[in-house]
Structure formats: C-alpha cells, structure tokens
Length: 403
Image (cartoon, rainbow, N blue to C red; front, side, top):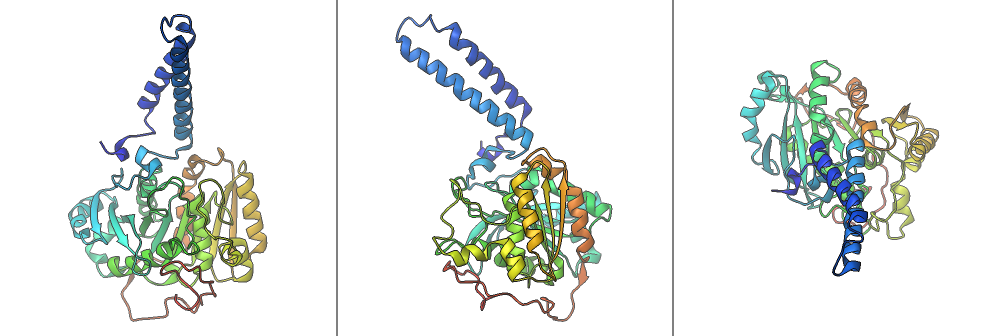
C-alpha cells in the first residue's frame, strides 16, 4: 500500500489509535509493580509507548479538526503520486491527456469536471513537479472546442501538495457547484506542487531561492506557459488568477505583485506579506536583502503598484495574518485594488478556509472573463509592464529583462 492511500482523516483509524492509547495509559500503573524481570526496562518501555500514543492521538485529532493532511503521503511528501480526487493520469507534460476525453464526456453529462494528474517539466527552469488539472464539464463539450478558457493557479499550503486541494477540501466539487450556479464561468484550474520532494524541512515559500531552486519562475511562468500551449488557455492577463491558503496565500500575493503583466487577480486566505523564516524554511535569500525585499508583498504594493485586484481574508483569531493584511492594505497604491475580509474563524486551520471557498470562487468569478474564441494576436499584457526584478542567480529564474 502506498503512503498516499493511508488516510489520516479517518474517524475509524483515530478511534482505534485512541483505544490503544487508553489501554497503554492504563497499563503503565497496572503493570508498574508486576515486572518480574528487567523491571526498569519494562517501566521505561511502557511509559514511552503510552507517551508516543498520546502524542499520536492528539496530533491526529488536531489534524482532523484542522483538516490539514488527508493522507500520510500528503504529510510526508513521498514523491510517489497517488491522490484521491484524481480521475486520470495525463503523463509527462500531459502527453496522455487524451485518455481523459471519454471520461470527461461522461462527467460533463452529469455536470461534473474531470481532474487529471500530470508531471510538468518547466521550459525555463527544468524543474519537474506534480500538477493536478481541473477541467470543467464545458471543456469536453463540442461548442467549446475552439474556445480559450480562463485559468486559476491554486497553490497548496506547505508542506502539502496537489492532493490536499483535490481531496482535503474538495475543490473540484466546489468548482462544479460554482460553475453550475453561474457564480463563475467555466475555468481550468492548475494545482502545482509548490515544494517538490522532499517536502518536510524544505519550505520554499514559492520564491526563487538565491543560487537555488527557481520556485517562483516554475510556478508563475513555466506552469502558465504549459497551460497556454498544451490546454489552449487564454493568455490574456485578465483571465488569470492565483489563489491559495496560508503559505499558498502568501505565494499568490507575492507572485501576482511580482508578475502583474501575466496575472490580474490574487486571492489569499490566511496568508501573510513576507516569506516566513523558521525551522522548516530553507535558506532562501542567503543574506541578499534586495531579493528579500523583492519578495515582500507590502513593499511591492507600495513601490511597484500595478492594475491588479487582491482579495485578502483572515480570521478574527488570526492575529499575525490580520496584522499583515492591515499593513498591506495601508501600503497599497493606485492602481492596485485591495479588498480585505475579516471573518469569524476556528483559528489558523483549513476549516477556516473551507467555509470561505464558495465566496472566494464567487469573487474570482465576478472578475474572470468566460471562455473566448481564438482570435488574432493582441497584447495579452494589456500594456502592463514587468518591474525590474533583481537576479537571484537561480537557474532560469526570471529577471527584469527576461519576462
């Protein structure tokens, strides 16, 4: 059995672990005076087992309440891709996406989208990562055959991958419902792995690391380019949104403010304004203050304002995230349009996010053009110019002159 098939959100598994924990805790005093041989070893072992099970039970309970990791594979980042919510494997760079058509046609008749898994190798960066692709029902309908669809790039939170989006909070079903209610137009959603493997201990915050992995370039440029070329997505900046929760929210804000010539909208739920530095974060900037500042959303909104629309959401118990949003809103300069929502929440966990998904999709839908016929070449940037990104020295990383 693959680790991505072991559910961490199973009430049955939590009950079994809870019963074992209770038994282990009771066993410690029960057998304390009954060890006849190696008394000290038996006592120590029983205490360690009981303590380990208590920690495991609390962790699993917290994970279920917060909805962080649906499977063991999503927690550990195993590199082997088996994800709930994925209907078909589209192969390397989508070479086998054609096999999704028959299933997609069947799903479309029921008003249901189709999710494919592909591995995309970036033209600029050479990075290869897992990407889940949501194809709406209309993608398989004949009248949309020559249409260019709008796109959302949905960034999972660290240390999760695409499966937490398709399985953990069921985004495909939410998209089906929003499209059916005409709360948003038919849209294709690209869900890339922002970290790669290994995940734990390698939080990249979606930035181009100094002399390291070009994560931002892969997510903002390579994935976009692949979608335009392979799926025929609308290249117009007005048709592109980046969204995410927690670290994915920071990624969305940062990448849209850094690349406004390609993206017009950003949605952040429980995100923040600058890369987090903690025990899980790699050495992202290596002392380069110019690269650090170039990945500070607050600074970008003030010094490099562009015609972008931002929605930033935080819970009233999320003090740090709420403070960051207040700072960003104060820094935003025209023509930036900055909207913020403060909501009742359950703390910084995925349940706070999941209850916001319908409203988030509606906000995106109000700003997203519907599928449009393939036309003659136009200025897809709408005249929006890139601003001078400093060179981080990462392979293939975007700079001011190469965008």
